Length: 275
View 1 (spheres, rainbow, N blue to C red):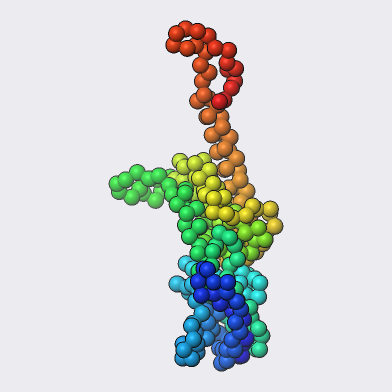
View 2: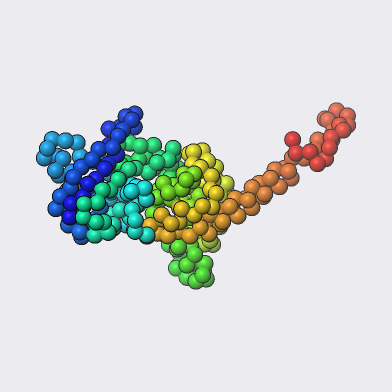
């Protein structure tokens, strides 16, 4: 196969960047997209040119490191597939492929197809943990968990944090990612200790990072290589509303009207006032 790759090249985060076209010959249809880039980079290095920078690690669709747009589609044309799993047989001989990085304010570009996705890490740090007692590991059957609950939790936990949901969303929302992290912990008994605070903290951090709002378009789940369902966003919204309501009620109860100064004089204060 012969392919023409039109690739976004950007030296660093301050560079404006531009597209550059490359012809790649002798492409094996069984190569992955990343292996095709490896072949291109070998040619560029031999010519003394700068190779194309792209992220990768396991190359088995597990780690979530890889990911970029192919002809305007996150991870390419195949559903439930990362770019490292995408083989070249899904393209036609002589076809032009346009490769560009995730485009979102919360994912600033670093170089070529590489973007900074540490905003996801900060969202996880805000609440992606559970409280456990120290000591020996508890027996696996100590806390019975129903199969439906376990299945829903595992479906949400399948998220690999690649960022395709953000790249596909017209609003650059991370609601699917954040919802998946909140859901898979909150559905299990071990994660329900921090359930309310987790929702408040992770949603707050998501907003701080500059992601857009979710308007239920559904592009996120369509682009997700693990097909995380939209229901996790509903779970996130439910947990957040419940936690916000509890927080407000606790605040109201904690504010007690002062009706008397220390010298005994009375004050005319509304007993229902909150501040």
